[in-house]
Image (cartoon, rainbow, N blue to C red; front, side):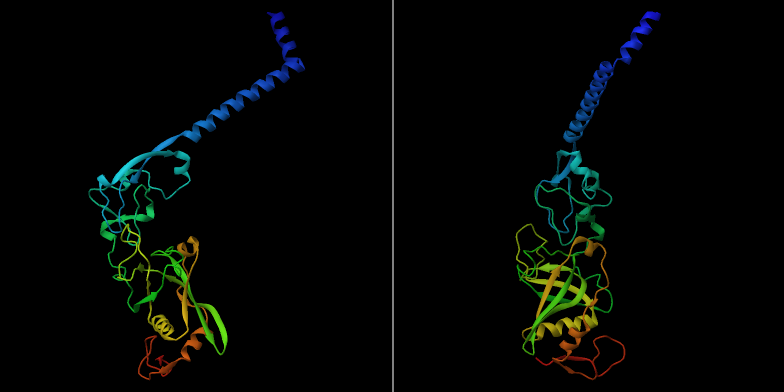
Length: 277
């Protein structure tokens, strides 16, 4: 027995033996790690997708949904991806596609696209706050950056005009929410799976901004330019407000006072006005 122990000790104390054992251990660790990585890379999970295009405000039904295998790593990287069919089908509280968007055929579902049908409004103006008014701004496919502006996005409005022989360009209103994007027939371009060309952006704004935007739209040579921002700007919107008092006052110079009209509400004052053009 003692000879065996002595032999083992001598074997383990040999530098070449230690080196060989270290290499073997490293190979085993690499092998296990490699196989783990491969298993993780090819691990899949079944998630729901749209078997047909589903338009805005449509109720999601079982026959509209299929399931397909995708890499689990892809699912883990998308925190807002819906991964369970029961998140889409609820017999006691049906789910609908959010107003202003649609789910294309073959697409996956995301949490911001799906709401309870009972809370999915058909008219974006029905929840407009008291003291607000709707303003429709004419646009085209280029002004909307290839129809990449969506209901719920917060953007800025810039002014471009020539005044006293010089070009003026600056931000007039910041953090204004788009309620809807409509075509020239007044239909939301996102209420259908068909390609639609945007013709107007719809906003709901306080009375003073409603007056300012309408006056701006009547001034010859003045152009309102919508400028999109990133998702963080929309997720953390600031107060919708005039960015430049200079531009506000410049726009006022194109108007005529109406003594008994005050666009901001409250007491009447003689500074209120409308455009003379």
